Amino acid sequence: MKAEDEIPPIVVDPAAPAVQIASRLLSELCAHALEAQPEECCGLLTGNGEQRFTRVHRCQNVMTALHRENPAQFPRDGRQAYYMNEADYLRTQQEAEAAGQGVTAVYHSHVGAGLHFSSMDQLYARQALFPFPEAAQIVLSVWDRVVEAGVFEPTAEGRGFRGRPLEVVEA
Ligand SMILES: [Zn+2]
Image (cartoon, rainbow, N blue to C red):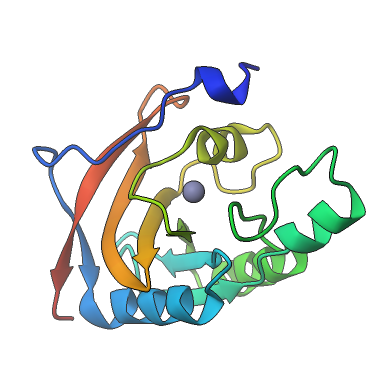
């Protein structure tokens, strides 16, 4: 695996086709991001083949706890990184599958940082045990308020991501 500083961050390509999200779901993501300040929020969206994003499921960001336990392995705390609580995402996955749905996106916020898919985000999403390798990755950039949001889609080759704009729709 490449060192973190060798992987350039990925930005949204404004010319790429936009990904649609319902305004009520984006509002829920923004509310979570604002409540979590000064830490990053994280969570999942579930959906199905007909409607890709139908529900928001908050997950606890346990990065600060991991950092306190093991600062060598987890050099950043929750203000600069996220780590989804395993019990939260497993429960969401099980409930979604029982309802004929699946996890279609992972979301998190950047506090006082821009809209990009960072080297750390890429390493987290590509690790062998990452539970949702095919999910889209939604990032919200927060500077006191949510200033930007975008989506990073895994490419067909499976190792890269492409940044795409989010298009808010009423649904
Ligand atoms: Zn990030």
